[in-house]
Image (cartoon, rainbow, N blue to C red):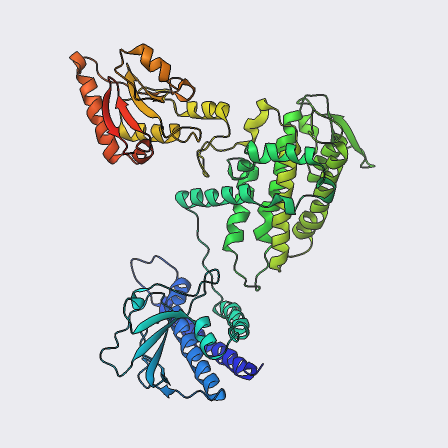
Amino acid sequence: MIFDDLYELYYKSVMQNIRETIDNWSFAFEVKNLSDRRIFKFVDFRTESYSMSLPFVYKIVRQLTIKLIMQMMKKSSIDYIESTNDSEEDDIPELYDIPFVIIINGKMIGFLFTYSVDFNYNIEDTDLDYVYIVSLIESIDGNYSFKMSSDNNEYTKTITLEEFFDMFWKNEYTNLKRYIEKINHDIVEIIGYATISIPSKNELLKFKKAKMLMLKDFDYSSIIPESMKNDHNALNIINSNYINKGYYRALVGNSSFAESFISSEWYYESNSYINALEKTAIVVGYLKSIEQLLYTLIMTKIDTGKKFRRRDKNDKSNNIKRVAFSSKNLGTLDFCLGNLINYLYKNSRDSDTWLIDYHLVEDITSLILKYKDMYRNDHLHKDNINANEEIDEIRIQTIKIFYLVLGAFNLEEKSIDVLEISETDYEQTEPVNDEDFDNWAKTIQKNKYNEFNLDDFDDWIGIVLSNPELDYNDWVKIKRLGYDVNLIFFDKKPHSIYEDDYNKEHEKEKYNTKYYPYKFYYDAERYRGGKFDDYFLEEMKKYLNEGKNAIKLKAFKGIVVNYGQVIYERGN
């Protein structure tokens, strides 16, 4: 490549300058830390040093990138006018003057390089005819054009660095990109610092939601065993349980195996590509979660006539014996991972344990045994992990085992609770079917009567309207009867509450909430003479203006309260 010598020099210059900068900052902050007596200190001195030095690192890289470009222009015999006004002393990376100008077709064209994606430049006080604002960011899906504030006039335009390169050296950016990636990697090594966030409750909920979506949309077809790829019956069973019944949600639930899995996922996401530290700690949760999963599932089969391994400590030959898997023997059983796998294998032909053919079960148990020997035993007892590729492989194999075992294991309805799938729906509130919807929606029924509360009512509305089968061409009646509020759905505009024949003809009972109403309490003495109906009507009008789920309610054709009062009607 004609510019490789310049790229090498560029890389070496960046590394040398960054090393010197980081060394100076580190030394300065270590000295400062010794005498730091501030009352309020929210971060340690290393975090503060890192934060303070980062703008200078970005500035150095930007300046040396501009220097590289000018060297490339000289080598390519491209004439340019170098500016002496670039603000070397400016600490803010976004605010710079133009480093060079090129005369194109008799016009003076300036080029400004910035990390910003929306940068304004006023050329009125300059001799320039046009300015390209070169943003040091990546293109998105091949889309290099930006509609920024700089494009609101005829004198400036924002482009990417790749577009800039294509103006003078078509396709050369790919070669530079290799050095940029190397710089990114090596600067992280030099800085030697990365923050690992501690998940707050809200952050953990968001993280679990993201993981829920990842697990649901994961391409499981790419990781299933070869022996299973053509067995459509087995795959249908596994997918029905794991995806359709939502067993994948167990991985972000409240069980011990979910806690281990999510912990490793958090550390996995926090893992930088610094190779200085050994990384076994990242995968411990993955390895532990499989053992916890198997134990959880197998314990649902206790006292069902099965057998399990017990190691007799008094037997000097160290023979392994299989005894009744019963509550009586529970204290003598050896629940190590090898014995858990052995149990699954010994019961491979047992329809009470598995839902798929035995030879496929044997493939699954062989897979778990290999996982135990290659990953768990080696890395927890012998070998360290230093390569990210190993972490990726262990993570994929863990997800694979969860998918196969949760999908193929015969977990009876009465035992599903052992999965501890959280009632918090991190992903969405869309039920699988009508029966699931009914069971799930009942969970929000109030067991204890409280006074009517719009926030509680809003939560209830949100869950009820999550049913994906609701027809938004229907009318909704918000019906209060005593201390219960129900949503009644009609395919025609409902009439007064007294016109029962008409209403029953058009009522869509399937989706009504009479089995799980919003329950509340009000003081009947205080609201004698129907006054509470007037209060309730005004509260419903108020809700349509203020409720966070009101927009869902207003998606229906119209809304009626109790005695036929229309409080909302959607335009056609």
